Image (cartoon, rainbow, N blue to C red; front, side, top):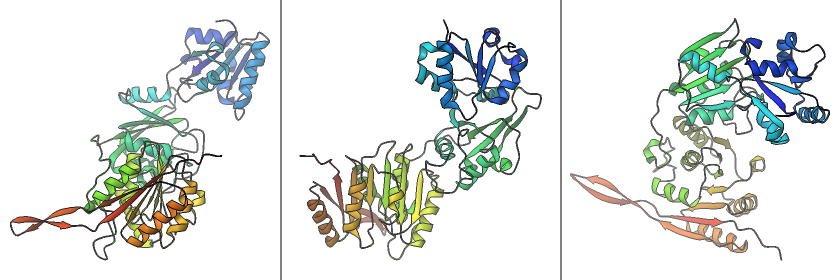
Length: 429
């Protein structure tokens, strides 16, 4: 391949970890690009007239460096850790320069090395990188904006997760994350430090709590393995599963109404969902399970219900769910555009709340509302008519069996009106 940029995967054991072809390419290079630490590692074997450039903090400049050098006919090598196509610079360069301009000379990834040391099959591993950003310690209820959020989603779904750490996002921080979200009892951890270096140390599988206050040498990687591999229910939990405030029959959307409401929301794996008037959290929590790559934002004005919904969240191991106390629509400006909105309670502000949600809702998104009074149903229809939207109303009245002596009778639940509307974009005349 004439005048291509060679991207060479390297390990922390330096020259000893290079293949013969990679070593030859490095020694013949006229421009070598890499992090300061990696450049120093190979300085002794480089040609005396080679130019070295530190890419630390200058990733966007690397492409121009390569293009300029290739135009000048110079041989270019980029040094990257492990496999450059596994959360490395390889895909970044191919995307910008094209496959024909890049040749990848891969090495063993650090996660592959860690698995070999532990005798852990890794063909089903989910790989997550927290190397790039530092958002600080995890705060319960944080959303996709936090650097550790992908770890939670992976651990909640996959039986084996490999995590590429950083000096800030350390194994002990990851352990505290899993403990705070109630996942620690379902998984175990292992840590591999300084792989292929004299200081290499493997910390074998152990409870997550054992890692939460320990310091580990950098670089390191983390493996998380699930104890329980049985599938989890997506939705349809019995009402009795949920903690709930009980002035009468319990402030919860009943299972039959929940099932129809969730169906009408037309959720996808990546849906962003708003749950207004969360109550015990049943709709939002089951929506979160149906949207594993999405996120649910819930708001509830009652302090006790917020506490109860938070308890249900932990019990269900739901991590893609943010719950705040407040009265909608106040505070919703900071939330991302939703693909689906559920209104279970309006706090007496139904007209304003509906208009706000319809304005923010993505085109072709769904608004679903539950009503138990004729007055609120009539008001909702009035607002939708004024907005020029079509809607569908479903009246749902279920009856559940109840024991009577050695027999069973049916006891009716309160009727509920479910209003569903799709937001169709307005056609400009």
